[in-house]
Image (tube, rainbow, N blue to C red; front, side, top):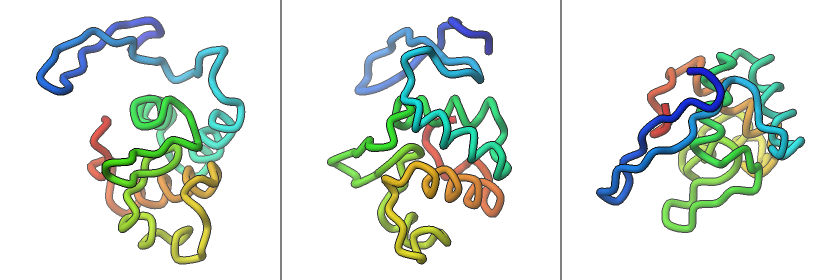
Amino acid sequence: MRAGAKGWLLALGLLAAVAVPSDTPPADASPTGVDAIEYGIAQGLPRAWAYRVAWCESRYDPGAYNRWSGASGLYQFLPTTWRNTPQGRAGLSPFDPYANAEAAAWLYRVGGPGHWACR
C-alpha cells in the first residue's frame, strides 16, 4: 500500500479510517525502533510486513506494553510466547528492541505471520 493511503480498523465495534504506513517509517518514528525493525528485516522479516506490523502493534515503540494482555515490545509478544523464543529462553527482555525484532524474525520463519493479530 502506498504511503499516506488509508486503511480501515475495526475496534470496539467502531469502524474508523486510519493511515496505513508504507515500508518506510515517518520522520518522527523512534530511531531505536526503526533501527531494530531494519535489524529484523536483515534477519529475514519481509520489509513491508515488518513495518506494517510494528506500526500496528506498537507504533514503532520498543517500550510499548499492553496492560490487559501483557504483550510487550516492538512486535508485542505475549509473555508465554516470548518465553518460548530463543531470545526469551536466553533471558533477554521483550523490551530490548533488537531481541524483539530478532524473535519476530525467528517466529515468522518457524510459524509464519499468523502469530500476530496485525497483518
